[in-house]
Structure formats: C-alpha cells, structure tokens
Length: 264
Image (cartoon, rainbow, N blue to C red; front, side, top):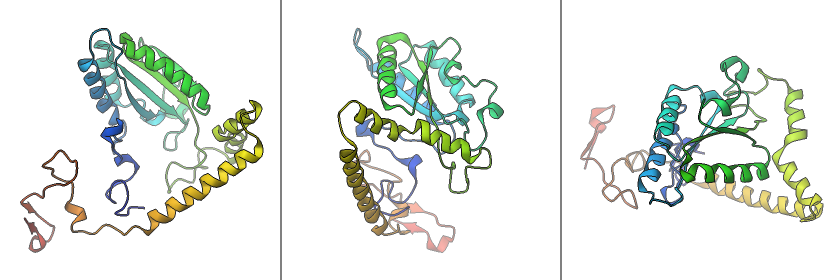
C-alpha cells in the first residue's frame, strides 16, 4: 500500500524486499538484473566453502520474459566456467508481461538454454514436484558440479500488472481450463484428502482461519500512515552502522527548490 509501516517503509514495492538474515537478497527494478547479483552470491559461496564440504547455493529467479537478457547469458558463462553453485530458475508462465513465449523467444525449452549446462523442467504448480526437484538440483549444484538451469512450468490467472487485463493475448477459456486442472492449491487439497491426512471439513476450517488472518493483516497494513517527506524520504540513504538500526543523514540534501534544501 506504500505506507510507512511496510517492509520498505513506503519507498518501494515487492522488488525492494531484502532480508540478509534470511539469505534473501531482493529483486531488481531492471528486468533480469538480479541474476548477476545471484552470480556474485554463488561466487561467495564457492570462495568460502571448505574443501570437501557441500557448498551453499545461490538461486536467481526470473521469468520467461527475461530469459533472453544479455546479462543472464554472461552470468551463465561465468558460472559454468568457474563451476559456481548457481541455480538459474526460470518461472515460465508462458506470457512474460503479455507476449506468448512463441512470439518473443526463438527457444521455448528454457531448461535447455544453458547449452552444455544441465537443466531440468519441473511442474511449478505441484508443490511436491518442486520440493523434490529442487532437493536434487541443490545437491547436484552444491556438490561442485557447476550451475544448473531449472524451468518451473507455471501460470498466472491475472494480468501482469493493474494495467493488464490479462485477456488481450489469451482467452478466458484457457485461463478457466488451467485453473480447473492445474491449480496448485486444489492439487494440495485433493492430495491431502486422498492420502487420508485431512478431510474436507478440516481443510475448510483451515482456509477460514487463513482468510481471517490475511484480512487482519490487510486491515493493519491499511491503517498504517503514509510516509512523509521528512524524515522518511531521507532515511536509510546513508548508514554508519551497517544498516542495523539507525542511519546517518548526508550533510546536505538538495531539493528541486533550493530554498527548501536540507542541511544537517
């Protein structure tokens, strides 16, 4: 909502989430720019690994629309050359921002894009396939075999953004068919029931509890105030302690109207 109580203090959206303590190094405003960052993390993991130990891995996620970005090819070349523990994870929703993959990519088998870099295709709508598939990929890459490409076959029911109705480049029948046959939540519910881990009533109660919790969190988020120019605009630009708690202000911040510039 762009409010001051949010994760980014109202300064950014989902691309600007970052949590080093949980090994989440954020997204990027530039398409595909997170992949070279992931490469740097993979290099760090390789550099810090002790001989004979399984390495930590870096996962760079990007969509089919970004898969032909030049910087990704450069990152893949370096990862392969130095056998870095890097996973190139392509979330293939088939339409990028609004163009089918057949129209924007000459190679639609994205898991093969690494050429000699091995790749695997996983059903991204199946949580069990994702869990076991990534378990194998992590072990393979972390054991010093070099990078690997992963193509997650997924789908989005809605448009790419608020300005995209999501129906100008595909029809409603296709969306409805995918929702009725491949929906990941429906798959989990059916699997739990079929395996005897839960019954329909238990799942319904769980859904009610989750919806109530989400509604509560949304209400709290909406109640948060909007950020103000001062101090929010100038906070967390410079830091004197590694960004842990406080931050320092630069000695001079020039505003468009010079008379309103700030000196500290």
